Image (cartoon, rainbow, N blue to C red; front, side, top):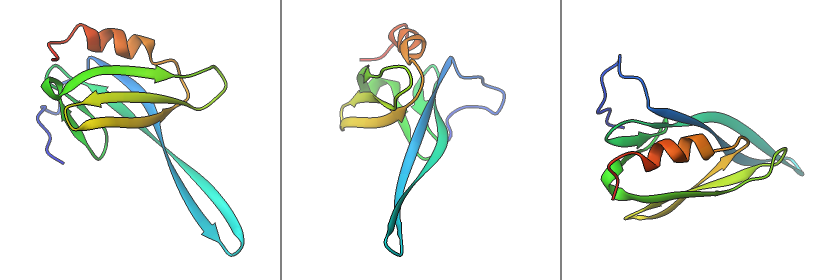
Length: 102
């Protein structure tokens, strides 16, 4: 992953996201959740493993209800990227809409 920000740059906003890994142990199917965050900077969005130029992101939408796992959709020039969420992403999306995206 390529970091375009300096170590002292703080994100404009962050959204908690979840990675879900499914494994099979014997006859038992297990789901393991890993916490991560989607960070919004002036010129890009970043997770632990991916970075998206702000100019490649058309929009962000979501489906979420309190107490349930929801979905955050990142609409990019390369397609739609889906993230799992457990918290309301409205403040994150509002901050994104104030950036110089497409």
